[in-house]
Length: 64
Image (tube, rainbow, N blue to C red):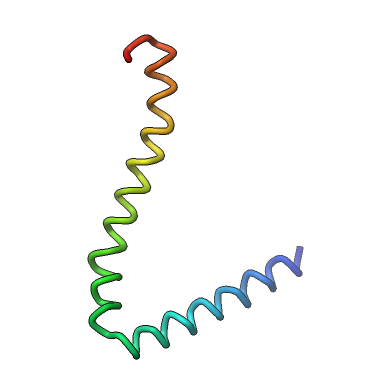
């Protein structure tokens, strides 16, 4: 179990280092990605999973 947590921490540190390097190299692109791209991605994910849950229920109940 501790090996898994250690691997996750190392992966988190690497991702954070890459993101920080990207932010310093491309400040405008990172601003766009953080404040415009991420909310759109979150809304798209919520929509996708809502459809995955709703469509089978609608088919079972005969609403489609």
